[in-house]
Length: 137
Image (tube, rainbow, N blue to C red; front, top):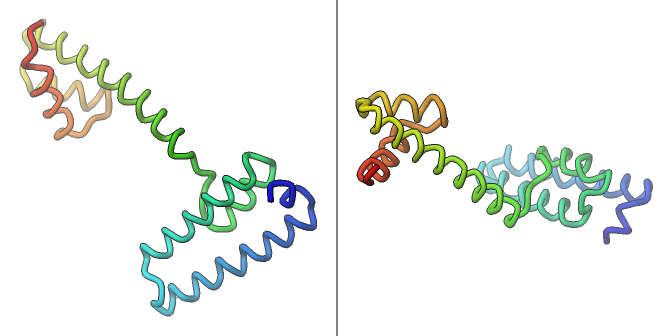
């Protein structure tokens, strides 16, 4: 299948098929035969299939754009990215809290720093402060 999507005539056929599918899905959505969630889910599934078939070749973005999406990341790529992001953020959060406590800062100042420097919501910052603020420094 990957080789199929490398020649221009096959790409043109795939584009025509995807445009037809997209238009039919939009028609069904307009006629309320597909809900908002169903439409988004199906388009997402189609984009996942396109991404796996094209495997990063030069046609991938072009085909995915037809369905109104962007090139997706695989589940494993997402987990790796989230793990790295959480590891860095959690370490930074812990450091900000520990430094704030060592400097005798008020909890509201520490919460504000977590929101400004790490981009956490107030709720998430408060949860981290509760978790890491209890540890001995």
